[in-house]
Length: 335
Image (cartoon, rainbow, N blue to C red; front, side, top):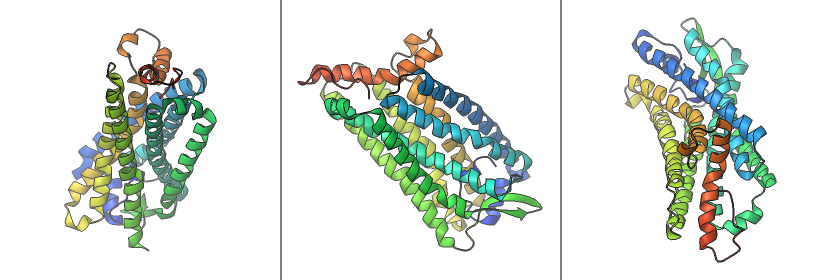
C-alpha cells in the first residue's frame, strides 16, 4: 500500500491488511492508488520546478535557501513514492530487505526534515519582523546553510528507527514490508510517541507562537494594508495541522488497537498517510504560488511568478517596518 512505509503497523497481521488489498478494502486501495499517483506527479513536478528556480535561476538569499531545502526534502519523498505505488499494485514488496528499510527511512526523513524546515522558516520570519535591523545585519546565506544542515542531521537521527525495525516477511504467500516490533513491544510505543512529539506537537507549538507574534507585531504597527501575508501565514499553519493531525491521531490509536474497530483503524491510517503525503505538493503552492499580487501577475512567466512570490512578502512587510521604525530605513528586505 502506498505510503505505508511511513506508518507503524498495529501488529504484523493487521499490517498485512494494509499492505495487501482484500476485497473489503479494494475500493479504498484503488482510490489510494489514484491519489498517490496524483501526489507523485504534482509533487515531483512542482518541487522540481522550485528546485530549478530557487537553486539555479535566483540569487542566493536566506529565503531561497529555505525554499530550496524544503523543495529538496519533498522532492526526495516524491522520488521514492513509485516504490510504494508498485507495492500496492503488485500487492507485495519485491524490492528486498534493504530497500524496505531504506525507503521507510527516506519517508520519515522527509517528514522530519520538512517539518523542521517549516519551523526554521517560521522562526526566521518572526525574528525578521520583531528585529528587522538586527536581522538585516545577521541573516546570511552561510548561516542559513548551517541551520539547514543541522535540521537535516536531526531529521536523519530521528529516522534511524525505521532502519532498525523495518523488515520483510511472508504472509499468505506474498512478501511484505512491515514494522517488526515482536522482540520489544515497548519500542513501538516509544517510536510512535517520539515521532508525535518531535514531529508534530513541538513544531506546531513553535509555528503557532511565531505567527501569532508576527500577526500581533504587524497589527501593532498598522501594517495590515496587504492581507496576503496573513493569508499565507494562516494557510501554512492550517496545512501543517490538517495534513499531519489525522496521521498522528490514528498512529496513537493504533497503539491500543484492541480497543477499536480494525476496519476503522485501517481506513484512518490510509487517509492519514495520504493527507500527510499531500503536504509534499502543497508546500510549493503555499510558499510560492501564494505570493503577493500573484493574480495580478497571472500573465507573466512562471519563472517571474515564482521569483516574485519568494520575495514579495518580505518586501511588503519591510516597507511597513521601515516606515514605523525610528532607526535606519534600511531594514530587512526579506522575511
